[in-house]
Length: 307
Image (cartoon, rainbow, N blue to C red; front, side, top):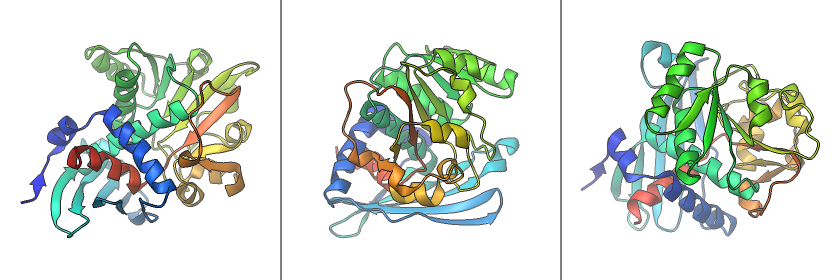
């Protein structure tokens, strides 16, 4: 009998730390040829709506995540991302479980950022600036706060009132977070900056970082996932340390608008699977760019199905 978990049940079955551990395992499985995922299929039906299909498999499981992404849904009071992840037994193809797709996406994206932080040498970034106030912004605050207890956050958003309400809601959960309306000031005092928006116009630029002599900062650009979307300006991308770290080379070269609009080539990239965990961050601006991959959904499914 197939088990179906709704959004809350999916959330209860996951933790950011456990998904991060499974992502580490899946990265190694991918490196040695035991985990696979093709480029995702994206079919838009207008400029603001699309459906995505993302299959993957490893030695135990086959999964497929199918979600719709409607950027205008926030104004309607509806989730931007909706859908489900179906999990099959690889040995016989039987359906095991169905998980809430939006919840899996939130958990695996934020957990992937935790892995990227560690591999880039940022083992306890504090404070962290969060750009955006949507689902991914909240997931990243929760993930970093869970993984690095005692973390402090600044949150930047264009709508002051909504951003303050976002911060207040997290304060009620015990998170040390406050609104910061000056992005330059936020970046100056932060070890890491996470961009989680659906912006089509880059807003984080090189001037926000000022004099970087003898400093180390990490940008986690996770919001933009299409070629016509970007959160980080070309001048900032080109000033980052090379190689730029990406979740997968294939996804970055076909979907990462931040990188493609800056003219970044494949030889200037390295996949997360191919870098070792650093003890300390390198001097300068390190950039991690994620567009998403079904392997990270597979990792979340392994947490639920392979315990």
